[in-house]
Image 1 (tube, rainbow, N blue to C red):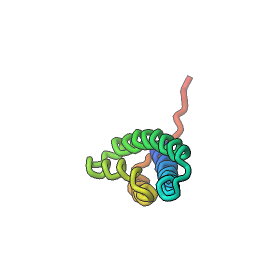
Image 2 (image 1 turned 180 degrees about the vertical axis):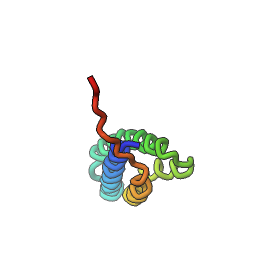
Image 3 (image 1 turned 90 degrees about the horizontal axis):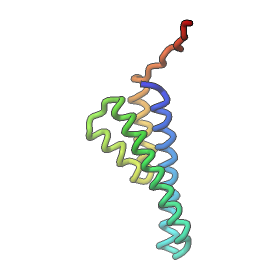
Image 4 (image 1 turned 30 degrees about the vertical axis):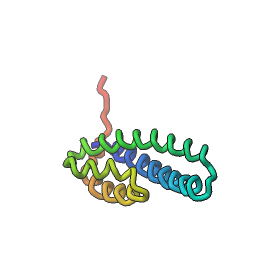
Length: 110
């Protein structure tokens, strides 16, 4: 497995987790203080798109790491639980690091 697969997952895990926290904050302002309805709509749509990208990258990583279905589902769902993606990402990195193969540079012969 290439390191870029893990890197893509890590970036999207952090971005998705941060956007979910921002969305939670917007929801507090929308429903608690009746302010920021438009901002909440925009943030929720951005989070939705980023979550879809996260799902694709997490599924790619899980299929290459040959995870069982239960583990893959937990990683996929962690993008919907505030702060869970931070903890799951750390655990995933510790488990996947040994699987990474730093492939040697391929030289072309003419």
